[in-house]
Length: 132
Image (cartoon, rainbow, N blue to C red; front, side, top):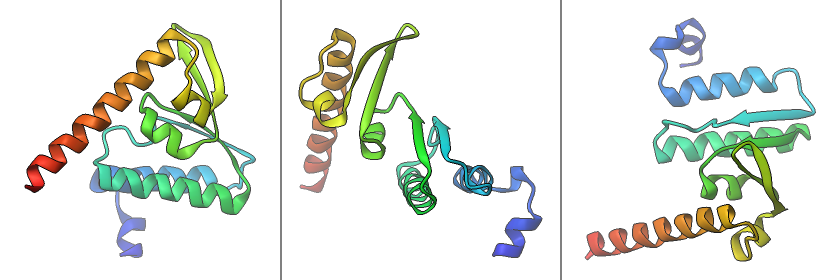
């Protein structure tokens, strides 16, 4: 398998494999900072979790700080300790992830958090009803 990966062209790899290759290249020189801009966009949930675990593990092992850019609040809060929320190109909120989730201050952040909670509740409801 490793030899096949080395000999493959990008179009021969899955989206998750391409993300992992990009991550490996980014971390190969042991940077002090990694900027991950939408690193899991268009990946299925299983592959998304694998890529996120890889980012977390490799960054922690190398002592690399992480700036994680995403519109996916659940993913963001699983990856970081501190969150900046932007709206129309300006920072509108800067807080810990716990404060952001439990007491968002800015109306834009309040809408994002409410939407994420509503989506999570809907997902739980669908999952429970399909299990019955």
